[in-house]
View 1 (cartoon, rainbow, N blue to C red):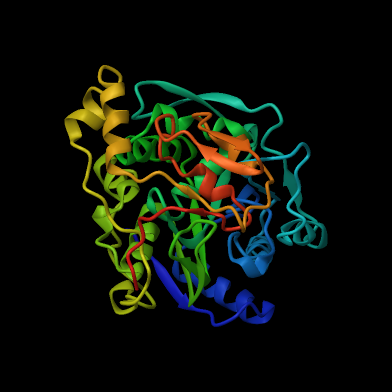
View 2: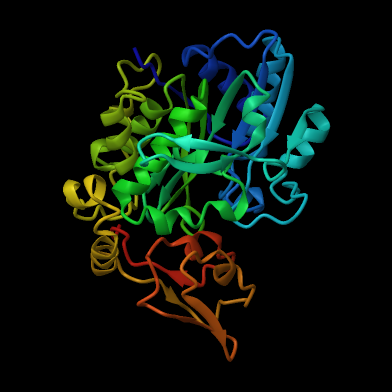
Length: 372
């Protein structure tokens, strides 16, 4: 039985958020945390100001910390690893670091002594994950309600990818180039992590070209569940997707790591669909035989097919601030700077859109968004 609690919360006012989070945790059947050590994993794609709505809002993190304290948690840790992580990273700009200080909980650096794990559903791929996983009793995922240029939506399951430290993430797009392959990787990570509970910040979400360069959209909701996949299913419904068209949801259902929601104890996702929500256009599914059964035999063919089906990002000159973050994160080394302009080698580009995710200036366009 996968219940998803959806509760209303109109604004980031701490008293309102605290009460809404309590209700979401109650109706979402948050497991007992008494005497337990808990890792809270917010979505910190980049350390951006809260008003940009890229990160889980600090008030959501604070409210979750307070609920855990009220329920007797022994230890509360908070951590994430952005796509480009500086040494000794702390999320000061997003306000999450200040929450950790004021609530007297520890911020965890995922880059310190990560451990190799064999990831299911990936032909025994080994990947570094934060060592804190071996130190805590439970992981709570705190995602943000956002679209995702590559995977259509990003939610509680995809949020766990942040447990892969720093630049260990971007090469995964080279090894798992199709949406279906990448979904298998994400679902495999979820199988390793086994999140105990998820709470999604949907007070103000993001539509259009997410997860970093879309537009803020007031949703006014929090979603909570012990089943991360069911929560993502509900989010996809609200966004207006057929949930099984979202690759991570389809793969998660196929692998049995979660299920479609069996009930909504408060608000029903089917009644909350946003008809004018600007989604990412769903592309034709890669053939199963090519994407999953023989990926390593026909890897060049698959990459050619991906490039044929997906458009390369476009780099705008005027808004570019020449921070070089796109160059630093590109796993295919397809970007260079010439005469203060980003030049893309479209033959080398694998269309992973990592550059688009980390651009702080909205200077990269990817044309896969459904017009409103």
